[in-house]
Length: 406
Image (cartoon, rainbow, N blue to C red):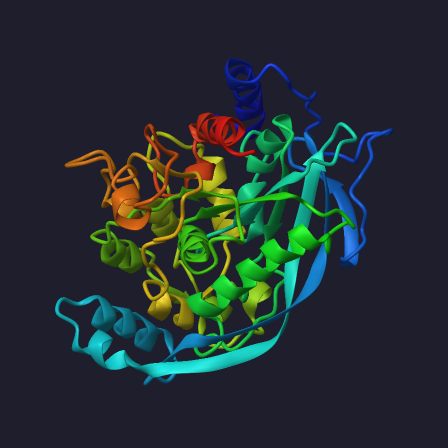
């Protein structure tokens, strides 16, 4: 299914879920007469439509002053070559792993002012909703995971339901600051940045509009960050949508090894040549397919696009990826978990056996949540947004939000 066909499919699926649909405008300029978000609060702003034209967006950078005392201190020096990178992950993921036990030497405080690449999108019908979704992408992508291609745009479907979205590049990715990849770009600091972005949305820092309702939506590592916000800062967001996520870690080691992690500056020198050896990418399109896709549920052209536009990750992120997840003991607001049924990273390839691993999240991490939802997309791998099933999953999420978040 090509992207144009997928867009037509998306329109058909949409009719099953919502009576209010905006006309599609795939690509191109913002249509005449459509009001765009204000550029207030953005540095170097640009205006553009979402991939399918159902939302209008302003992109730029914003300065975020963030600090944490929870970043980890590692007894580790960055590898000098690819062989050392490969050997590092073999040692880290062996079982048992003395290397993993000896890696962490306590915690450290980090602080700074970081430039974060952001995009704010509102429906292309001259409205500015009071509700916004804060979209946090996972490892291997940048912010455009959420607005990937016509027919694969979460932003477009959210706009159909009258929802604004703020998608951003995590620290160290895309247009965001490329900070120290070992000591600074770690999970704990990224949780602080997500929390601050939520506060800025409420305070009217973007487009001079204060959103009264902020929903945290994540994918994979972005879901880990969002879940940590619900645990550490439960007042920051009004609902949580966790995609590509579970409380099961059995698939993490094979997933990480299958990424065949490569030094970014060597793998894609034209894009990442200025980065040091602490910045990594998946090694090939084959590695990307194993980790993020599940055949025959995707278009090979989408796999090629994902490989061509892949984002970086850091040693600090891989070493701290499990350091921030803990039960959200005080969380009573809505939370939903949405996975591909063949997710490798968080389900080891089977999200429905021996239990539904999406549903299993709630008693473990959200014991007081009153409203929950679980959805497994059929024939779908870890990169949920890149499959034919994405549109149905998107609509499930928007329907869940519409019914349960006020």
